[in-house]
Length: 438
Image 1 (cartoon, one colour):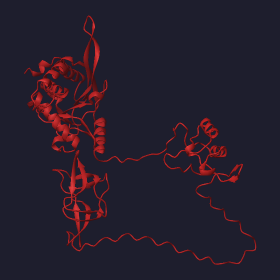
Image 2 (tube, rainbow, N blue to C red):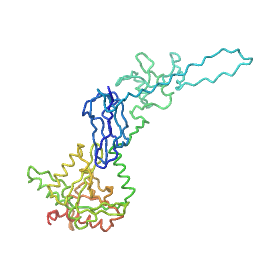
Image 3 (cartoon, one colour):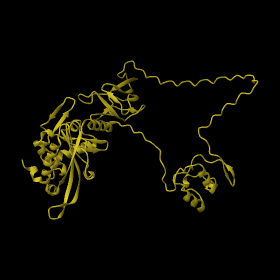
Image 4 (spheres, rainbow, N blue to C red):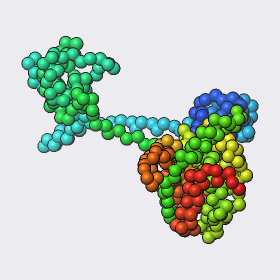
């Protein structure tokens, strides 16, 4: 038998380390070739690490949440044959420390004067004082009643009434009578113990605390949000938009669409409106390297779409939105959303955005303050759509209204430029035919 060391492989070009986010095995497990051992994460891309050999897990080299350098040993297996570690021997288990031998006590002659008695050690848990009952004195129970799940406590109607008036849950009272029957004395003993364990209403204080380690995607999100808020002075601009005409057009297009086309949502229209607005203000489609003091203004418009997944928030990117029509935008958004939710999105699909859209759909709220996707300089937030009465000059009429809440990096985007950008998008969405005019 021999040993085989598995090192963290290269998980991406230019990646020097990765965070261990999941173990699929434990020490003592038997694994076969291609069994997934662990999952690591870098730049929001999760990579599974398979075993190249059959063997038994002897050692795991990191804990969940640890950052591991590429090439570092992460697993050691016992394998048939020599393995890849020459002369390797199993590491000896740590020896348990031998218990100290008891010191012999030699008898000594009694002293002329008696010594003070040693102070007795108090027990860790003090028992409650005995409770006097009509049947004599008995010790009070330290803990609540030990009943099986769903077992109904036995008590007379009078005892039940008294417990109800005192706010006592009889399931927590130990009964001293036959078959655990609860008496008035048992109620007195329970009250003598101090605060009740639970009330008859079922409401009881809870003091438990669960410590949850922030690892994986959640830690990446936390780091990114902290960086964005600490380095970018945000300005948020909220504008109300009448999307009644847009919704009518969208419904018509979806009704008459070809079977091979994706269903249109609001996002493709917004993306096309942003493309047209950025053509007039290219400074919004940029990344700000504040360390170097350089703004990288991009010609290609790569729109990130913030998407909620079971593991957290990710931002798949629709590349070159300027070269996509309405239907192509819709198809790409659907494809990327499915990949993100299933965890199959690649690193390239989750990076490279130059401006981002964030939307909570029907839960979008009336207004939000989106956090910019650092190092971008702008983010457009979509709030929920609602039918509201709007004054048309002579009367109130029902219109489908929606707010856009957009944030900008105030270091490089002035408030005036932010307002012009949002107003341009507003005009395009309120008169959607302009979206199709070159």
